[in-house]
Length: 241
Image 1 (tube, helix red, strand yellow):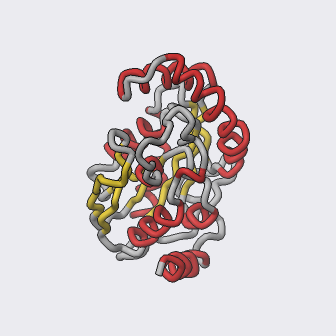
Image 2 (cartoon, helix red, strand yellow; image 1 turned 90 degrees about the vertical axis):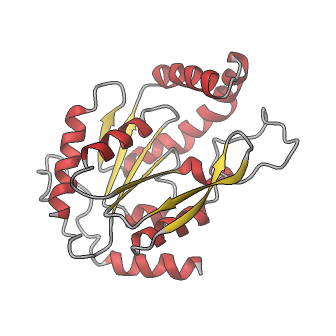
Image 3 (cartoon, one colour; image 1 turned 45 degrees about the vertical axis):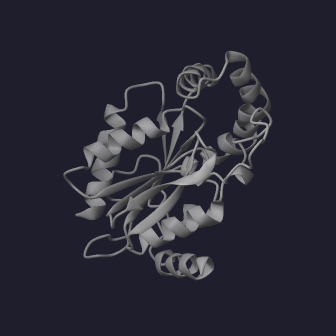
């Protein structure tokens, strides 16, 4: 069932994929051949980058800027973590590896949304480490998938209208991670440092940073997003008009 949904959408979308990468210096709104009007497939925007680079913040700002133009849904790759068995040593459990995410389920959910279906998604809950949460996704015109694994699946990349990489320096990302995980999850500085050194940094160097080459647009995560939001909003609005 998963394969049939994914392959059908990729097949239907592949004919429109030529020219979807934005050449350097191209004018926003003139570089894609696809047409999203009149009930065709929604646009898929991918936002990737390192842990605490600013992906979620950019996605929320983009959704807000489009609120009057089109229905927008944001999904995070964090929603698709696999359940962790009870009594698992969380110090050793690695969230910063593609194997920790149910990629097939993520593809299935995105494919259904892109075929204009409403979807009920079982989401991962960090407090219980289980897929006990739920999210109802209505039919939308724009689907934003953000997270460290947003570029990981070739099938997802092939469906994307725009791939954005949030580029943030290591020191800034790590400072944000210390603040975020100590406040949100009550983790100690020693625990966070261990996770960064043994799990987050190796993944970033081997998987996330090389995936930057897949991006159509690279945005600094250390500067205000205002100009970048205007640029992306103009592109999306032009495609949907």
